[in-house]
Image 1 (cartoon, rainbow, N blue to C red):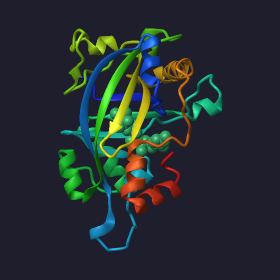
Image 2 (tube, rainbow, N blue to C red; image 1 turned 90 degrees about the vertical axis):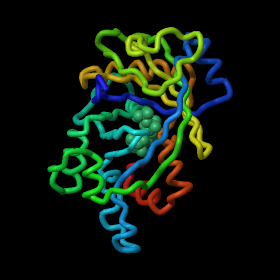
Image 3 (cartoon, helix red, strand yellow; image 1 turned 180 degrees about the vertical axis):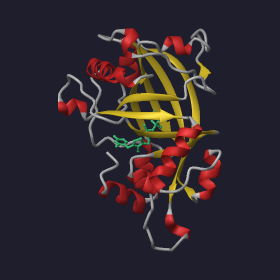
Length: 262
Ligand code: V4E
């Protein structure tokens, strides 16, 4: 992809009956809908020693989230350093800031560093094999993406372009698939996700190419959240968290105890 490392500034919210209505009223446009499948990988110790959880979820416990989304490896990890915004600490806690990279060399380096193994492998596939990383969660998502014009954000500084979405089916009446990167400039994306295990969650998202754009992106997300009267909370679970709660309670408990699942 043209841009393989971006900072995602995201706020999750509950899907309400009127969410899409409010989105349209606020000038939102349905941009695309598509589906994808995520397979999260980590150290999962079951076939090493039966009840031994030593070393299990070493990546997640370090707040590293390695997944294969369809055929692409992606790694999410927190943006380093203090992120200063002008918003209140309570509002600020609702906004997640993660780097998402598809750069295999970077993924290999970061994952190997956390696992304490050598990074002398040529691909993520090879690292996964050598380090015995295994799938621990797998599910499909159907995503509807709306685009909202940004408020109170200077385009150039806030959001600096985004790659197109592979496999996205562009909704009828919405011109230009190729223009999507351009469409998203200076805008807030609203993703409405329905997972194949029955959990629905919304996400406001601004994608930044540079760390210095993050504070303004946070403000843009917060402005839209209040404009749309979205219900967010630090206890609102991600799809992954709900999947684990329902299908891998052992792993879920471990991550909750370690405070890595918000
Ligand atoms: C669990 C987790 C992460 C992996 C899942 O990331 P998420 O943004 O929920 O996935 P998705 O499918 O929406 O990906 P996108 O297409 O937007 O890239 S990343 C960080 N966490 C931990 C975490 C946390 N600490 N707090 C909350 C509220 N959620 C997740």
